[in-house]
Amino acid sequence: MERSTGSNMQIQGQRTQSTAIVKVQQEPSIKIEPTVGGQLLRKLFQIIFFVQLFLVSILVIVLTIRGLIYAGSTDRFHPKKWYPPLLVSTASAGIVSFIWQSITFHCPSKAIKAVFWFTPLLTCAVGVLHILIGSPLSLAAGTIAIISGVIQSLYACWVNSRFDYASKILTVSTSAPPYNTTTFVIVSIITCLLYSSFSVTGIGGATATGTSLDIVFIVVILLSFLWSMQVIKNMLYVTISRIRYMNFACGVDINTRAAFHDTVKHLVGSVCIGSAIVPVIGTIRGSARAINLVAGDNDEFLFSCADCYSGFASTLITYGNRWGFVHVGVYNKGFIQASADTWEMFKRVELISLIDSDLTGVFCFLSGVAVGSICGIVGGTWELIIHKGYATEVSIYAFLIGYFMCRIALAWQQASVSAYYVSYAENPQSLRFDATIPVRIEQLHWFQV
Image (cartoon, rainbow, N blue to C red):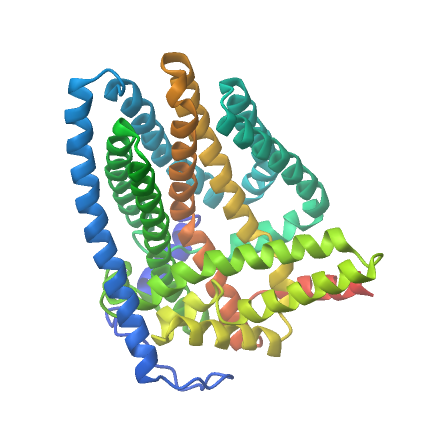
């Protein structure tokens, strides 16, 4: 996955065998001393994650066996019509996600433009599919999808001037990917394929009987699935961001396999905490920014409410943001401490406005939506043809699987961008950085004036 053989040979020449968690002498700007409570919290979340994973696995096995037995004695559930479309959609998610992350690496500019213009179309296509299905749930889902597609298209028009910078920062931060990145991505996708297929079998078993309790079981499996996929993504994120940070900050490269071993051994608790916190805080902050745009400054009451909510979201983002994962990997910090340190550092070097205007995070999100929509269309259309009653749920499950599969495939690139920002913020004068960020900061200042 190297753009340049020469640069790759240079990186390999710099490779070192030491993989211990890095201890840097520089003190963080916000001094949050490690406490016994913090250590216990990390351990508690790690235990909770593995216990829920074990219990949900047992539940999935029981539901699968029960569903197959029930399907053999009644015509209410048809495994041959429920499982194949969803499993094929899952396989499609893995294939499309791997291809897309490769396209993004080799042609970032074209990938960014394609995602912002085609994702709204794919989202609307999913909406039309659900409207054709015609059930109350599918009509609601279809309406939401179409409205979302329209909003995405308007957003793409609004931010199209930022595409060039997003392409530049993505190119410069991923110019020399860690050794064996392709293998690492493939293994991650295969792991997600197996886990998604396993979860799907349990959901199918619960669907077979369809009691009120089974609905609770499906919700439990989905919640476990969402958290687990976030953890898988962020394990990859922490590993790659640590490797890229050391390269950007020190010119040192670290073996990918050994770095991942360190992540598994030392950092699972912090990753589990971040995986639970970041999606919630990110949703709150995104909604706050949307409300600010809608509120404007015409209505004083609405403006004050929006401003209050925005302040609340800004406080939360300080203690839970994805850039904190970089310090989790590099310094072995707790996630909340790492988030606070990185955000304070961004404030100190005046990078907040640049971070907020960067489109790489939105690009990864829309890429996930695009792949999820493709998978939802594949599974939903298939079910619409062979068994209309399953079409809505299969399409939704396929969308979720496709979305997370793509986010995991792109995690190494998003982690590289985060590592670039964090390492730059720690030492903006370093000769290892080109003029990409300074030039963009000057442009933002010029626009504000």
